[in-house]
Length: 161
Ligand SMILES: NC(=O)c1ccc[n+]([C@@H]2O[C@H](COP(=O)([O-])OP(=O)(O)OC[C@H]3O[C@@H](n4cnc5c(N)ncnc54)[C@H](OP(=O)(O)O)[C@@H]3O)[C@@H](O)[C@H]2O)c1
Image (cartoon, rainbow, N blue to C red; front, side, top):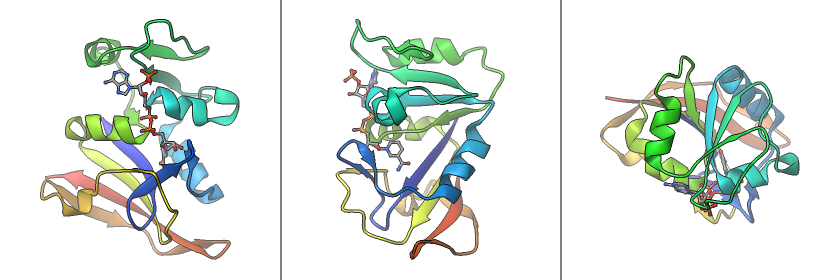
């Protein structure tokens, strides 16, 4: 399993149920990594997507503890066990795509994290765990600095030792 997230300089990822920044090149990177694969997200992240719709060209799995919750075009899993069963015969890459609750719970099960670092303070309410401080994770790749509307960002890959 892999994680993919865009974080600000404090590892913030969202506020008011939305992303902190919208950077087209980051969206494109996210699409290129996840298309054709399986994406796993929390119910709040699905609801934060345009019209609350699942992502196209991907198998969408949504976690919710609400027994009555359904999401058109997505498979809903209510427990970690249900998710494991849903993924047991997966022949595609599995990406944990957020939000904060889901990143935190699945960090231990992942071996690679694709992190877009945005050099700004987005005044976030929810955060990705700061894996740069965790000895089991190491930075293995970092792109050159990029810029969009004055926002500097780069793409980094972290892998578990
Ligand atoms: N920057 C980024 O890369 C990025 C990526 C994704 C999201 N985000 C942002 O993150 C924010 C949302 O994150 P969040 O932490 O508030 O919510 P979230 O993780 O997207 O969803 C939380 C919900 O997931 C369900 N859930 C959590 N753990 C579960 C478990 N073990 N089993 C079953 N269901 C479980 C619960 O749904 P029920 O309440 O229905 O039970 C819970 O309320 C938004 O601001 C979003 O824009 C940022």
